[in-house]
Length: 286
Image (tube, rainbow, N blue to C red; front, side, top):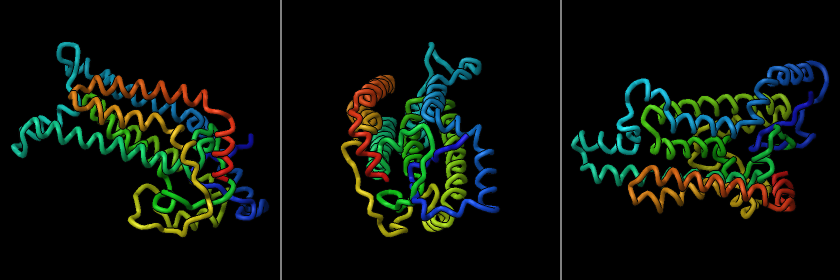
């Protein structure tokens, strides 16, 4: 079965690819064979992300551990605020306010980073169920980190974790981090085998997960498509609005409801988005 590469961060022209002969061809075949199971994980990656978030919010093991009080459990937001108050550093109200501001900052950072990355990579590539790779594009956030989309999801996880029970938050952060590392490893193995030296040079210059304080490569000619990116990442903006507006009610359940509404809106927008926008996004990423 022939795979198309999923990497949102990289496209590569045929001129950049190694010759399809001799040991190189064998290396590509070997890599693809090893990726078969993981290709399924990539195809359904958003469902897997969603399942991890759901388990984090439910934290079913808390029932067995007796950590639920009157049918509910303490949220990480409350737990962190209480911990700060017990330490004597700040009052409980100040600690609660500080944690809320931290959650708003995480939600905003993830929305901005997702939109910025999607604008340069293209909405159709970001949401593609299969892997893509035509030529290396170093533009926007891809000049600072190789995986801005995954980094944004992890930052978003830190925001949502504040609304989960502490044990669920710990599980979710670890599970999302490990799953993202697995996806990154698979994508990079494919791109390295498919794109050859052009991609390896990119990897040598730009950090995999960390954020460089300065651009590591000159900007490419890719043009951003901001409207398509904003519509494609509307869920993340909805989550930010939920934190920023509903958070001041100091009710974690209310913020969760806002996040769920944002998810529903994003699914509707995705279904109704005109096909021409998807085509434009793909052309801009190519």
